Length: 86
Image 1 (cartoon, rainbow, N blue to C red):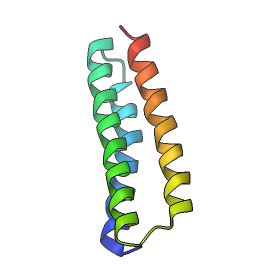
Image 2: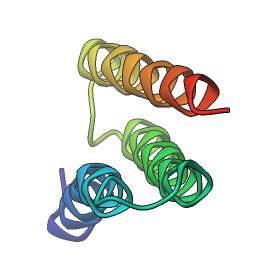
Image 3: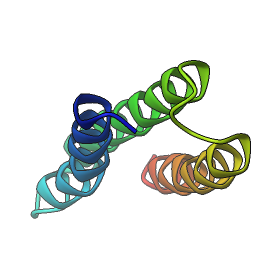
Image 4: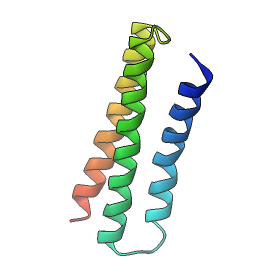
């Protein structure tokens, strides 16, 4: 995979965890939900990058599917956490 796309995926993936951590620091549930929303957006950015990588032939179909499935699980978990805070 080319360096720029790899770097973008890493930044977006890091952003998932960083937004969850930042939002969890003793703020209100509404504020935490906002940061969880940012985390979901970052996860969707990872998915978008995976599609780009696959379209460009930089990611195999098998690798794409494995990573896509993992990110989808993370998105569902974040969404469930957001829902539990309402």
